Amino acid sequence: MVEAKQAALAALLAGLGDMPAFAGAARAAALARVQGQGLPVKRDEYWRYSDPSRLTTPQAKAGVAVEDAGFEGIDALRIVFVDGVFDAGASDDLGSAGVEITLLSKAGGDHWAGADFGVLEAEGQVPVARPLAGLNTAFAAEGVLIRATGAASRPVALVHRQTRADSDVMLHHVIRVEEGASLTLLESGTGGARFNHVAEVLVGEGAAFHHIRVQGRDEARAALTHLFARVGAEGLFKSFTLTMNGSLTRNEAILTLAGDDGVAHVAGAAIGDGAFHHDDTVFVTHQALRCESRQVYKKVLKGGAVGVFQGKILVKQGAQKTDGYQISQSLLLDDDSQFLAKPELEIYADDVKCSHGSTSGAIDETALFYLQSRGVPEPVARHLLILAFLADAMAEIEDEAIAEHLGSLLRRWQGMAED
Image 1 (cartoon, rainbow, N blue to C red):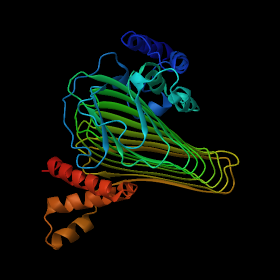
Image 2: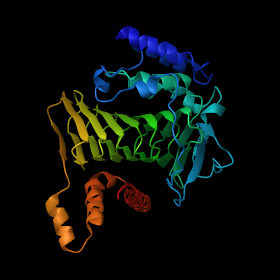
Image 3: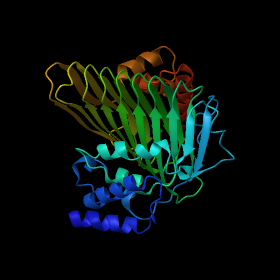
Image 4: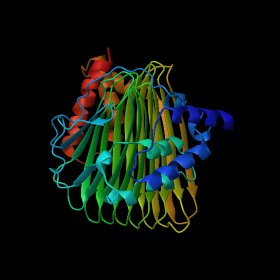
């Protein structure tokens, strides 16, 4: 297995070219880690439910470009990437949200992000190896570097567009929310036929970071995202992802509550049909006092679709008064779909409140009958029950306008997805 992993890595590296110059030491260290690890294979413990070969073969698979509604209509600073390349003509003035924004490709050696680039990714390699995140750190040439020193005047929206059927995209973002500051980051779109995405988020003391993401409806998309975050004392981190279709989507969240009284919530809602494989893999570490974490994931599956959830809460020694909660649930609309779950708790403190649970089931026939008996047509009744099932995950969105926008988007998608 080791030889196969190294051979796959050598083939992939041959097509990547030279490493960018910015943060050269961090990139070289990341490449060295990847060379020691090799690329992931399905026999690896954290890939046992998903086949990484779509993400590791040298040639990106063909996909069909789809234009997503995303966050159209929301007042936000838009930063547009087309097949991984910044599109200045379609983007807004990068200084118009009251935060400091620099393109990764334009950052010089004295940029503040030079000290942060790759740091959380490197820390996130323990205890679980994440070689594709390291590969991104080593070779990603584009992304955004965002620093908020106060309350951002409006959200920052990253729009990922795909125009080429064979686009193979890497983006790497570094976001620093300084003490007492706040920022909302929106993301939407397909990104590429194959998409390797890393975001490193540093939430300072008393700061707040909100992340809402809509992943595109391209049926052939293969996407891997890594969201690394460190939350300081009394800091708040919240992330929600809505996913509709895609042949392979794996969203990893690696969160560390590093300061006392920090809060980290991560949630997702996914709807898939047919050749849909959706994997949420989460690792939350509590290493400070009185911190709170929430993991809430809901998946609606039909036509042979597969949903995966791997979630872990690690409570380190001394992290007393921890409050950790984890729930993963699936709604299976036929007998051909499946949901694979691996919830974990690892606790080294004795004064904690931690729980986890996972369930799978079909639509409640009693509730369906009740709605029909009140004159609701069966297709509409099914839509309503699906939306109700997803509500707990979507409740993590605090901004009412954004929550309503995604609710409307989901209702439109449901109307398109169902007969």
